[in-house]
Image (tube, rainbow, N blue to C red; front, side, top):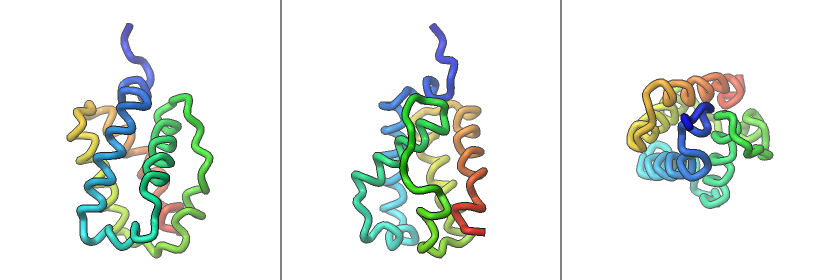
Length: 120
């Protein structure tokens, strides 16, 4: 049976968790992004991000964290910061072998939250 939802095409919970791990490894290796995670429980952060992407992808997981604006309100993120995040996300999807069209769909969903993330 062919995978029909984006969630299934990403490999379900396990596939999304792999992408999220790759993403945060990249973020934490990036000196520009490290300060944003100094006081963050990364296990909890990875779990939240996995649930968030799962929900965006049409999976059964329900993200119950803060809304995007509240979660990012005190970070003073810039447009360049946002572009760096998107770049690391796309590279992570590519590194995990996600199909280009599916990666584009995930990135588009994140880009749709840009105003909230940047608190505009």
